[in-house]
Amino acid sequence: MKNYKLAVLKGDGIGPEIVDQAIQVLNKTAQAYGFSVSYDYALLGGAAIDATGVPLPQETIDACKAADSVLLGAVGGPKWDSQPGNNRPEKGLLGIRKALGLYANLRPAVIFAPLRDASPLKPEIIGDSLDIMVVRELTGGIYFGDRGTEEQNGIKSAYDTERYSVPEVERIARVAFDMAMKRDKRLCSVDKANVLDSSRLWRSVVDEMAKEYPEVTVSHLYVDNTAMQLVRNPGQFDVIVTSNMFGDILSDEASMISGSIGMLASASLGEGGLGLYEPIHGSAPDIAGQDAANPLATILSVAMLLRYSLNEPAAAQAIEDAVAKALTQARTRDIYTESCGAKLVGCREMGDIVSGLIH
Ligand code: IPM
Ligand code: MG
Image 1 (cartoon, rainbow, N blue to C red):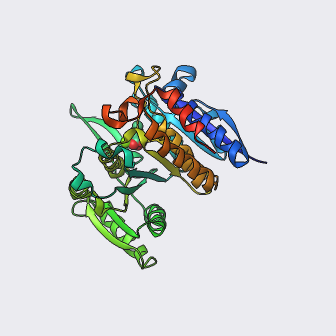
Image 2 (cartoon, protein in one colour; image 1 turned 135 degrees about the horizontal axis):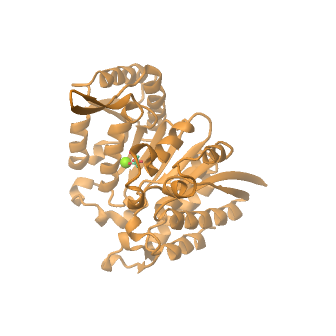
Image 3 (cartoon, rainbow, N blue to C red; image 1 turned 60 degrees about the vertical axis):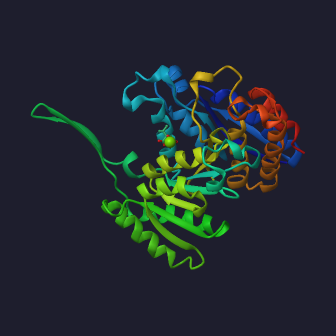
């Protein structure tokens, strides 16, 4: 029987609760689909600061590198707000992305049919469906560029630098073109080429690569216009490819349009099969430990993990189907409404229900 090794980083806040449910579902799926999974738990973020003083201990990097794939809950919380900038929980997240070379961040924004009315947009704007894939560059740009804080003549200033090389843009554009080919063959590259040199380079690389993908319809939009178009006519988008910073912002916007931020999974991929999978939402410290969190985004992250890193598409599909079915029976409070016809449940019960629906 095939055995997969997963590194598991539960993180902070609701991280441990939602990851526990995802693992329960994965174990059930493994049983049904004839493979086994072993888990190597490691610390990241605030939990790692508490235990070791730093948000990303070397053992965590080693555990991830030794694994077939990585499952992450969420990091951060007010408890660590007083940490210096270079030792915050978020630094652990940025560090693990960089250490594992996870340059491609896939953030799907989809509307789950039973949750249509949860979108803040009017039904006529959403149209029949919403299915956007944001492909965000994850290990370059202003997040990792030259930075500093200086003081001259008594005046303090700070700077961060956006820099992209041609190979960096090429590899993320390649991921996006390949993704578009598997979907509706429409790719929108987002930049700020009316102002930034780095964006003009980005655009020229995307145009060059477009010649290799004649079937893909390529468009370019400025980031400010994209922010507007996402709420004006989201259906125009299939795959969006953009830089680290713009992707951070636009992926939050796109996920909110779906009304299901507690439902959305994400994958961060590098060279080779290694990937890191995590829900798009954060650590929600305000509801941590109350058995109130929605575990579905983490459960769906496991489905992405099975599909993209372990090449177990049938098992991935089984989880996605189970989640769709579970939604008609039960909801956690973030997606519950009186009229939804489903029962209000906590995090554990939601996990149990999905697990029970895996065959
Ligand atoms: C995200 C988050 C992170 C980011 C933070 C927590 C560093 O917002 O994954 O989108 O900016 O990348
Ligand atoms: Mg973000």
